[in-house]
Image 1: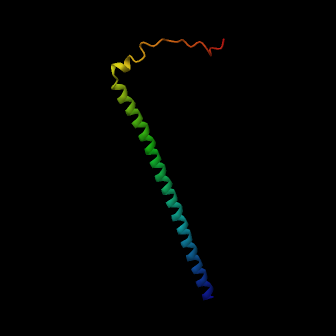
Image 2 (image 1 turned 45 degrees about the vertical axis):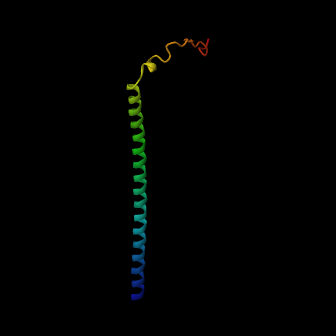
Image 3 (image 1 turned 135 degrees about the horizontal axis):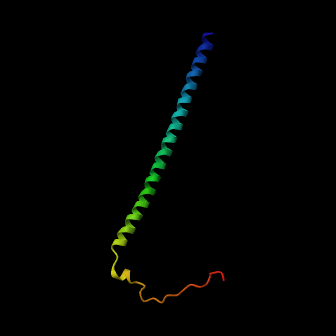
Length: 84
């Protein structure tokens, strides 16, 4: 009886240790996925904000050549594709 109790107790301890390892593995996996998603989100926001700042900077630094770049061009009306 003592042997079977001690084996049962040992089996329960090993099972508990395996469960603890599985839980820690799952939590570390979720933690890693969370950090990666936060990093991707930060990069995406940085790209969007950086693009907007760059567009505003370029728009505010226009030269007279930019204002009148197409002033002498012949205007061609587009009549094709109207669906007559």
